[in-house]
Every structure is written in C-alpha cells, then in structure tokens.
Amino acid sequence: MLSHHPKRSRCDAYPIIGALPVQAIDTALVMAVLDPIWSTKPETASRVRGRIESVIGAAKARGEFKGENPATWKGHLDKLLPKTSKVRKVENHAALPCANLPAFMMDLRQREGIAAAAMEFLILTAARTGEVLGATWDEFDLGKSVWTIPGERMKNGKEHQVPLSPPTVAVLERMSKLTNGEHVFFGQSSGRSLSNMSLLVLLRRMKRTEITSHGFRSTFRDWAAERGYQDPVAEAALAHSVPDAVIAAYKRTTFFELRKEMMNAWAAFATSDPAKVGDNVVDLRSQSASHVG
Image (cartoon, rainbow, N blue to C red):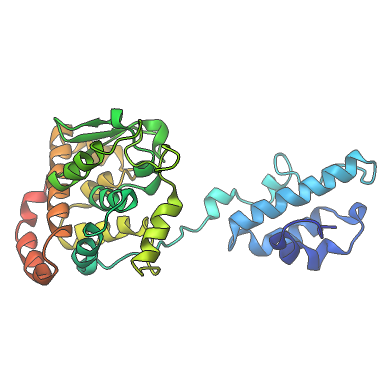
C-alpha cells in the first residue's frame, strides 16, 4: 500500500499494513502503526499518519475505498491520540562546555567571512539561529545598543529586545562596511540572508562537528547558572516564557538593565583569554549578589 512513499513510511507502516488491500485498512490498523511511535517519534508519526490519510484519500477518490478515512486526524484520531505538541521531546542540541568557549571564540575570531561573523554574533547574543540569520538593519539601534526582534520572527510571537554588548556592536560595525542589502548577514552570491548550511559548513571547517550553532544557547544558560544569575533573567535573555508574576516582581527597566549587565559579562567571558578562564569564574561569582532584583 505504501510502497511508493518515502522510506520512513515504509519502515513504520509497511510491516503492518503494506501488504493489505487498501479497503482492509481500518482505525485499529492505523492505530497499530501509529501508537508505538506516537510518543517516541512524534514528528515521524505525524508524517506517517498524513501519508496514510493521503493514500486512502486517493483510493477513495478512485472508488477503491468506501467509508470514512480511518487516518483522518480532526474529529477522529484526535480523540484517540494526544497532540504531537504535547508529546514532542525536546531535541538536545550538542553544546560546547562553557569553560571551552573562550578557546573556541579565539579560533572563530581569527576567521574571515560572513558566516564567522554571524556565528560570533549568535554566540554573543545567545539568540536562535533563525533570529540571527534573518536580522535586518532596521531592527538595530546602535546608538542605544539594542536589537529589537519583531514578534513575527520570534518563536513565542512576542517582540524581544536584546541588549548589545560592545563586542557585539563591533561585529555589526564590521558588517556595516560590507552591507549588501537589508540583511545583516547575507549570502555573497544571493544578497539574501545567510543560510543555516553556512554555519554548519563553518563548524565543519573548524573541525567541530560535535556541536551545533543552537547549542551555544545551552552554553550560555550553563554559564549564567554557574555565575549566579537568577533564572528569570537568564530565561528572559533566551526569550523563553517567564511567568507574568515573576516579571511583575521586577521593574521593566531594571529587568532590561540586569540583562544588559549579564550580556556584557557574557561577552567579556566569551572573548577572554582562554588561559584565564579559571580566574574569570572566581571574579564573576563574587559579583553574583548584584544580580538579585
């Protein structure tokens, strides 16, 4: 039945329903395919369900299947299975231990090219890859050292302001001399925003295939925890949802100032001499009392 569909559908579905005539497929058989992988591989399971639904739908249009489509989600399988958003496991993006970051940054900053600049900016801002690569010049106020990312570009749909440390501003100033359109980090051939593949290729050239660009957000989070920054401040820097009651406990200006202080310290650590990482840890820990709002 699914022999003409992609390999994943064949692997998950074929052993159960692949050899059966399409009219024989019922809800119980569809559930037999989906139930074992719905919690462990929700994205794959969702795609498999959609493909089964499409095949049966096509058969129904040709008169080869009678009755309701047993793979229909709305009003049918949604009564039997939880939404994939509720069971989707968070993927762990390979992250660099924070103690190793200064050495990585030293190597990175010796490399030329737009991808290297984008990676440096990504690390210094602890932003998501898509947020960085999609950045346009009109989002920046370099006079106030603030990057305002509009809600439509944010995962949570809310506008996010990122305080820019001096090293981060320096990256933007370098890029402004190379500007080739509205995007800060652009593909030299297209003029459009740089692709994710460019950062992957950069990591490969650096022989760092064990880490990902997104993993630097985890590196930042570990660093912030080790330095004693309060969770709401670090979570806000990552644009994670913070309960309203927690945000209300801070004055908004103070909350931003705390993040500004934290991002300046993060940039200072990231760009520090790798040989002095131990000393930096001690010094920054001694300042943790100032991080309490």
